[in-house]
Length: 214
Image: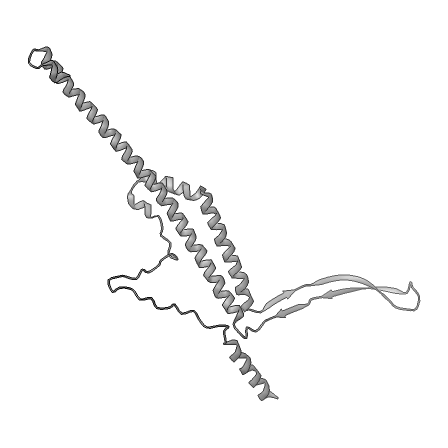
């Protein structure tokens, strides 16, 4: 009997090592030799890369936008949903323990008449243990799928944050460019006025001519 139980346990463990379907293998793609294969880094946090511009006002505007942007808030919500789904699926890999205690009092009959009763206290402490052996790897495949969805949601969040920051930085530098153009225009107008005043002074002193002034 002992040998049979040992054999059954070995079979169960062997089946538990099986997984539904083959592992995904990326198909090879022929590319030119001069091409360099990219290494995606969506999982890595990019940090406050805009601080490299050394513009405190720009950094303050970007941080405020990241805190108040509704698109980012939606992406954060999707990450939370994916994380909760992953935890729920991953929990199926482990035994589930449930406890439902009960305490109360009830009447019992102690004789043949209806009033021959007594009261007793009842205490119950049921402890249930449930565990599904993942023979064919269904749970493991579900965990892999949920983890991939969570990582994709986290990567999307970083992409959205980077897009918002890039849009603000682009608008900011465009405004700086407009301010510089306006400053250059004002300086040019000032120089032209000085030139006009100089020519006008020459005309008034009889050195210049009015055609030059015009």
